[in-house]
Amino acid sequence: MIDWLSSMEQTFEYYIVDPGTWKDIKKINCVISSTINRDDSSETLGSATIDVTEPLDECYIRIYLITIQNGVKEKYPLGTFLVQTPSYSFDGKVINVSMDAYTPLLELKENPTPLGYYIEKNSNVMDYAYRLTRENMRGPVIKTKNDETLYYDFVANTDDTWITFIKDLISNAKYTLGLDELSRVIFLPKQDLKTLQPVWTYNDDNSSILYPELDINRDLYGIPNVVEVIYSNGPDNFFSRVENNDENSPISIRNRGREIVHRITNPEMIGPPTEERIKEYATQLLRDLSSLEYTISYTHGYCPVRVGDCVRINYEKAGLVGIKAKVISQSIKCEPGCPVTEKAVFTDDLWEGWK
Image 1: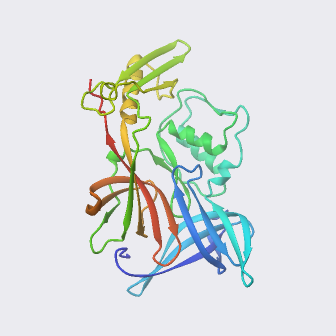
Image 2: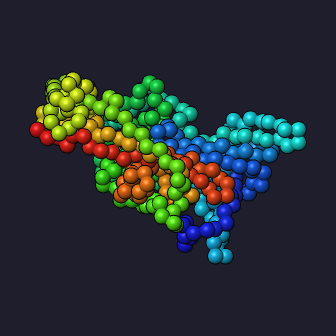
């Protein structure tokens, strides 16, 4: 297995992919450069830009990182992308074609759900999610077993596409969409950062792949100190208000001198609503919203870390020691050194639910 902290040769290979079998069918030799963007805030979770010397028709392209270390050659997939939207430039000698490319989730974004579409209550959430994803895109989908069922009929909004509908559906089972290295669709359980274990540690020692530049941002704007939950559905009517009055919390009503209210109406809940459940929901929501989020931006040489992974950062010169953060975006330049510009977030809890 390759040692990502040691020197190696790096090149890249590109292949056209059969959308029916998801296998490589033809190597492409006209690529000049490419950049891969992975982003958990993007509806399709990422994109790529591929520059070539001759145009290509719409097709799926897979990008590989090729490494040679100690005489051993290995091949690592970085993603599979649907090529569209070419633009051309000519410098008097060479034609340069720049192509925008998208993850397979684009196919779920392109079409709306049928008007009036719904899933009946008591249906299995993840079974339906798998079937709908598989039926509405060509890329492979990895099935996840889960017993969560719908408490109510789940009705599509008039402006829903398949991707928004499926994302909302699986949130009922506390799952989210993801992609693996081959860009197969996977269903990932939502996990709090505190429960995640780091898959990689970035150190600033002599063997570090971490570049020296690093940015840290934090923002207190809009963090509430009051949550109100209103639930009204037929005979079920509940109201709960939870306040942060803790003198040790910097965002409490007392310390800020004002209320910042977050109100939510008819939240989707698993199981029948009760007064106790609504109160627990409101308390947990205020606790979740009372976290100060830090965003760290840094660059490192390529290693097998993906968006959604937990990493540990030890950068003593920047005052970061033992920081556990979750990766939210990556920009990978497919060039020697394979630099990855990465953003990760970690939180500082400002209220723990004290009475």
